[in-house]
Image 1: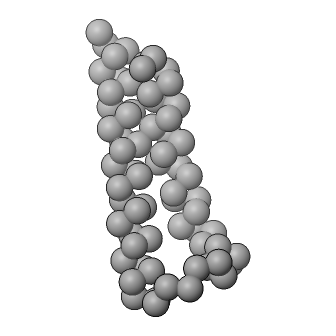
Image 2: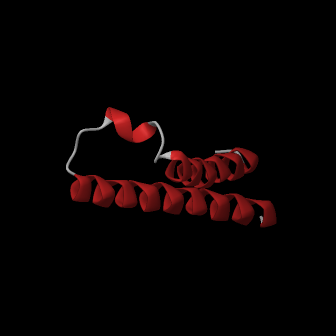
Length: 67
């Protein structure tokens, strides 16, 4: 993958979950009918998984810039 594409994808995967978590209280929670505790656990797991993948892409892109 191109180094700039990795950095861009990484930034998207870090910023989008943060924005979704910020706005999830308004309209996003209406479409899901999970139990509250299970839903909070799932949201937290998905959030950190996507953020970590985004950070991985950022680090790979920076590593490619050096090489």
